[in-house]
Length: 318
Image 1: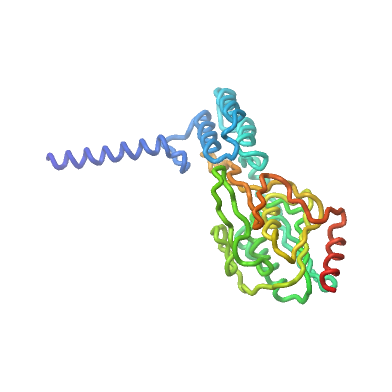
Image 2: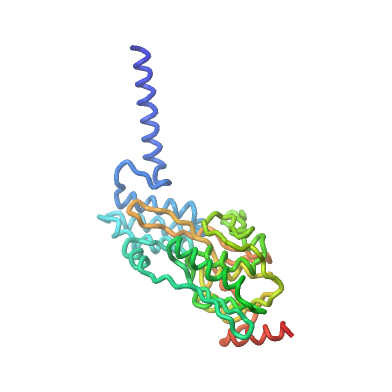
């Protein structure tokens, strides 16, 4: 009997410890013993912003956190807290941070998938790179269109048109263009402790394991002039794709300053399915220039970026 009691006591102790861990730290894994109250929901969101946000060492954040707790103290459901959390996340993570909630996500889910284009004009292959948010199958197709065009078509130079590319998943963009990108470090993420996390390309794969996309042909296309077109609507992953080309000798940027969302967001899931998209890192390009949500400046400022790019390409091919 003593052995049975000891076993039961051990089981009870383990269960209590397990439940205690879930109660105090389960929010980190979005695990709860009971549905959180709106106030607990807010506290969990603020805790995650506190841990990940780039700007949480400021007095403004301390005040914002305090005000958010006070202003949501009488909230009766999660939806009531969203306006306050939307304000708070901008303070914690900056302009690139945001919350995706039910209404917002339903609108996003009906966004149309737009395929990239590849057209040859006078020995120049013009690659139009739109924003991408889609399924794995669509990501494969997006990548294949670009990869196939670069390997199969006949051309002497390249224009990568990122104008209007507001972001999304950067993997299909980068991997689709991998034939004209050198293997190695593309850029690095820099967190608030100045720790670096490089994003590298090797044999048609990104080191960050953000994609299962497979490249069928890893052959590199070298020594062709490459013009990158950007504008004020080139943002987020569109900007990071552009930065992959910074510091490459045969590349020149044309257009206007980009949108200035040069940073990386981390996704945190909340109890109701909403997500926090918290900016947790800035970006350093291969020339060691750091971008802290500032625009990419083109080498040539122009309202006629494609025409200017063509003129430059002609001068390079003489």
